[in-house]
Each structure stands twice: as structure tokens, then as C-alpha cells.
Image (cartoon, rainbow, N blue to C red):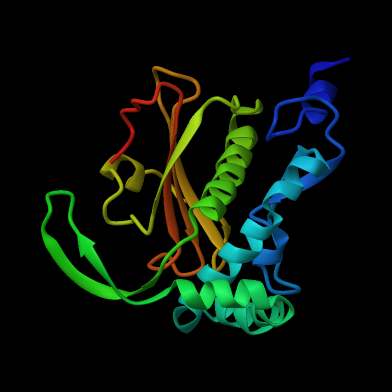
Length: 222
């Protein structure tokens, strides 16, 4: 088997052969109908993709809902797919409502109180599933090999101003100007160490900072 065929047959998530479907990064459901363009497409097992279906729906609704007033695309998405999914799933609707927070306190790394803003509590299991698939997909796209399963991914939500300056200064890769853009950095001393700044819709409300940490003590963190 030639290297290119072997690569196409590897699942980006588990790293095993036999990929039988294609995954889109970001997910197609993050786009209103008719506005999908430039998606990153990578091989996957359908069974691996099925592990994060709920997390996709959850984050699409959270990010598009929080960004709606500042992003027309997010507003359209939430008014169509977002509201439809909430109407069809009373359990999801109840969950999101229960996680809304009138005010969230913001504390600096040095312990200084920075004030409070409206926000939402993010389900940790959905966060882990969503970020794992996004970062592993992007890693596969750039490195052309799967990120090993034992590599940990550490995550911080809405950290645009607190992410390390070195990642904030990296060039922006724009998949869609109103849906998804990101920055990334690979460490020179370890092939599996990297940093990712992911921006969904309105970057003030929908930004994720993540690092892949093969040692547990990555130097790319905040």
C-alpha cells in the first residue's frame, strides 16, 4: 500500500486503519444552510465521530447563542438550527437553561478581581469531547498523522486576552470569516506538543485555548 493510501485509511481520532467516513472541521452544523465553505476534511471512523454528536450540538447552541447580537451568521444559525434542536430536545433545553449564569466573576492569574459579566457554565464532559475532536482533527490536518491517544489536551475557554502572547501573535487561519478561525503553534522540542487558539463566531464569546501536552508539563500553557 502506498503512503498516501495508507494515510487516507487512518482515522484522525483513534489512529487505527479502516476509516469509513469523512469528518468536517469545523462541523457542518456550525454553518447556516448555504454558507459552508473551505471546510477541512479528514478521514474518520463513523463510530469515533458518533462519540461527539451531542457535544457538537451543545457547543453550536452555546456559541451561536452567546455571539448572536454581534455576529449575523451566528444569529441566523441560532434562530434556525439552534432553536430547532432545543425544541426537539427538552432535555438539552433544560440543561442549557440550568447552566445560564446571570453573573460570572473574573479573577486574574494573580488573584485580582476583574469584575463580572453574564455567562454560562460549560458542561466539562461536552467540553472535553468537543475540544478533543477539534484539536485532534486540526493536528491531523497539519501534521498528516494522528495525535496519540495518550496525549492530554488541556483547555481554557474564552482566554483570548490571557493566552500566551506567542500564540496570540501567530498568523490567523480563516476557514470562514463569520464562523471559524484559528491560530496554532508546534513546539520545537516535541512533535506532539502544540498550542491552539480557536475562535467561533464572535471571538469575544466563543474562543478556546488548548494545548496538547505529551508530558503533563507543557511549556506552552498559560
